[in-house]
Length: 76
Image (tube, rainbow, N blue to C red; front, side, top):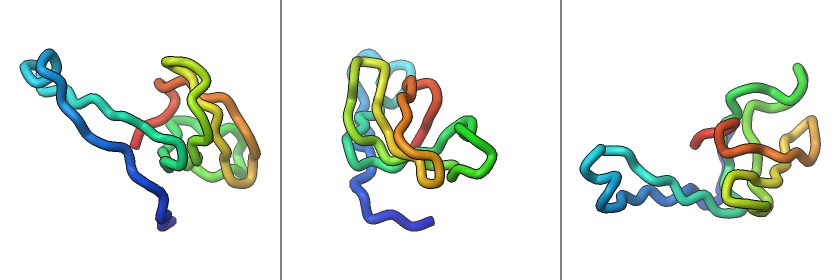
């Protein structure tokens, strides 16, 4: 599936640069991959709609609908 949405920015902070761990800054309209499908018929990707808290995003999953996702439930 090809999306024209803005992709997350890859940044490295000074603390994470020493550990070689990138910090991903997701933005609304980013498409992300889901670790687990919300239902057997839904897509494996979600469109981030808005950030609800530091760890939670409201997202839309094709063939499922709107969903709340913890940041551990998706990746780019």
